[in-house]
Length: 256
Image 1 (cartoon, rainbow, N blue to C red):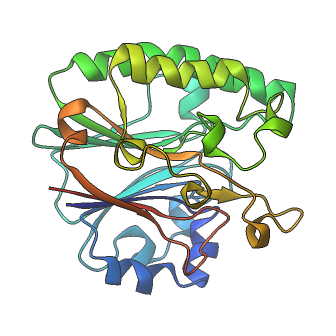
Image 2: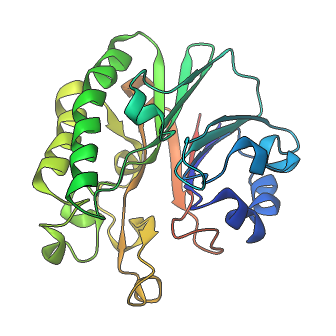
């Protein structure tokens, strides 16, 4: 089973950059997308339901902002939009599709880089999301959460870690929150399970400033995080960089 996670930074922009021909060649079973930046009325037929796929979306209320989606080759048994938290759900940040005993989530955790107000909202979502993450682990289902978590967990997960210790995305509180997920609650960082020590080739996002892409000054902020049983099925993981569809790179993981 091939599962892809990708922050599109706008589905219309990514489409114009060749997303769909590439996607068809990947033959992924499930594709989780973040930062759709569109409403249903903006979507073409291909965006809504690419050939061979069912499409599911949770749009933000604000036009051209946030939003998440999932494409799957198999029709979902059930779809859950949002977390029943109005301020979070209005931004379209959580979408869960259930396939038998497997739940796949597309998640877009907020960025706090624009200022204190958004960082406060990010911390608020992290705090309120934590009980749900505990419930998912204890549900008896296998769960995979794909998405842009907007947090680099360890020093090996970003190029300039020394200069970013006081910046959103690498704050001690954010990193400790991820550590709690992995070491206390029981979630597994699937990429790190397969590649525990890789550094420069692990990045999934590059700033548009300062030639970050050309110099590979990147961050690993896109994850596939799963319950232990499903993580044990992971066989290989790659970060695709041959083409660029957004400022993020697709994270592709194959499971048995």
